Amino acid sequence: MKKLHIVGIVVIAVAIGAIISSLSDSSTYANFEEAFATPESEFHVVGTLNRDKASVYEPEVNPDLFTFYMVDREGEERQVDLLKSKPQDFERSEQIVLIGQAKGEVFRATDILLKCPSKYNDGNPEETGKES
View 1 (cartoon, helix red, strand yellow):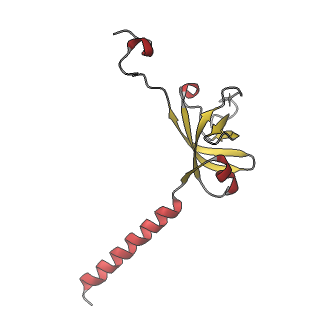
View 2 (cartoon, rainbow, N blue to C red):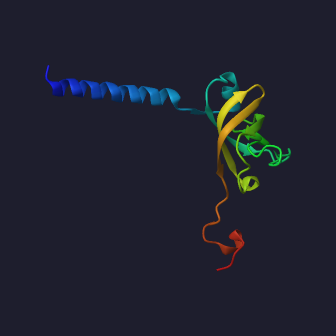
View 3 (cartoon, rainbow, N blue to C red):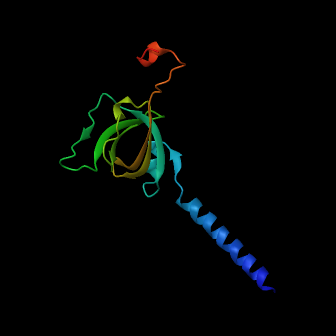
């Protein structure tokens, strides 16, 4: 076999290994029921903030812990411990995507994505609260 063929086979093997390892590390979208059924896996859970329950952020006690309640798309509510500081404009969010794992009865999120209302509503200044 030529050296070029050996190098090509090695490159292909490394590429296949990289693809397989990235697939096993990737998380998937789920609801709370699925996330709590397999707590060892990481999931993306989509839902909305339960504004009827209190959110707790005490930066003087622990600046990397923010606790709140979220309702997933299926209507199941769970307590969420976000292992980061409270995001800016959190209360204004329309939708929340949590990235994390289930731990006991609590979903422990390592990251969060917020969908906030757009400041551009079809160009109507009365909807944005500003005049042209």
